[in-house]
Structures are given as structure tokens and as C-alpha cells.
Image (cartoon, rainbow, N blue to C red; front, side):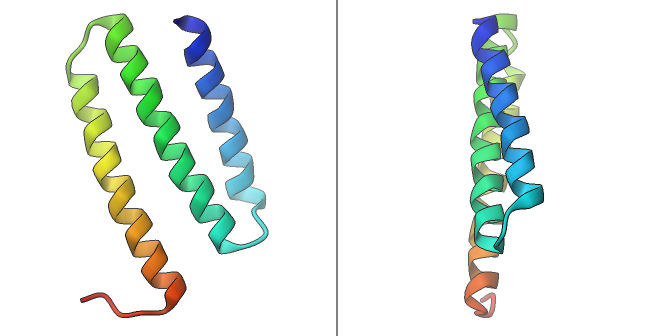
Length: 83
């Protein structure tokens, strides 16, 4: 299970590179969304490995915040108002 955590963390660094170097705002938005999914995966694996239930709560909160952030950024890209 440790190898999966290392793989997910290395993928997080690749997403950070895409966020920094992304040519468009949409590319950066997708990279931030993927980073959120990877962080949730790391939290889930750590929750199983360390037998800590609160990490699942953290990952659920991260998913909700990531979803709201993605919706907000999509609205910003479409230049629509928030209702």
C-alpha cells in the first residue's frame, strides 16, 4: 500500500507542474480538479493504512470543496453571474 501512496504523491507533483505551466486557465482548472481527486485518494489510503476514520471525513470535505470550486471556476470562465 505504501507504493500506491508514493505514486499518488508523485502524480500530485506532476499536477502542480501543470498548474504552474498550464497554457490556459481551463488547463489549470482541470489540473486543480485532478489534484483534488489525488489528495482524496491519498487520504483514503492513509485512512485504511493508519486505521483513522477522521481522514475519511477530511477527504469528503475536500471533495465537496473541490466540487464547489470547480463549479465557481466554470462559471467564471463562462463569464456568467453567480445566482
